[in-house]
Length: 68
Image (tube, rainbow, N blue to C red; front, side, top):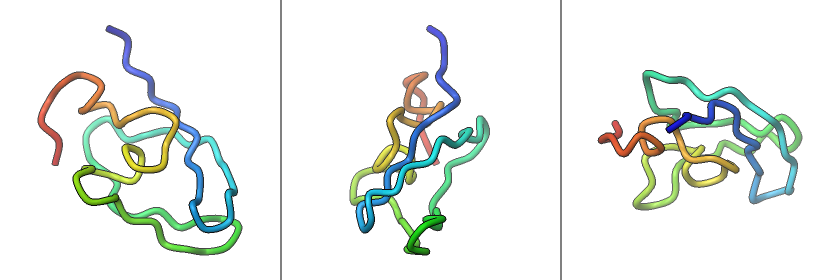
């Protein structure tokens, strides 16, 4: 299975979207929206901001591995 490394993260506050490259070896717990400067945090039950707000889940989840 090929792991997707790019994800479009969408801010729930202002709907701004940006394509980002996800880290392969760690989770990203915080993300600052470039447009409205809201600090995004993972939703309850998600391991990182990409799993909550991205177009693709983080690499660990894609590989069915345990995440942070």
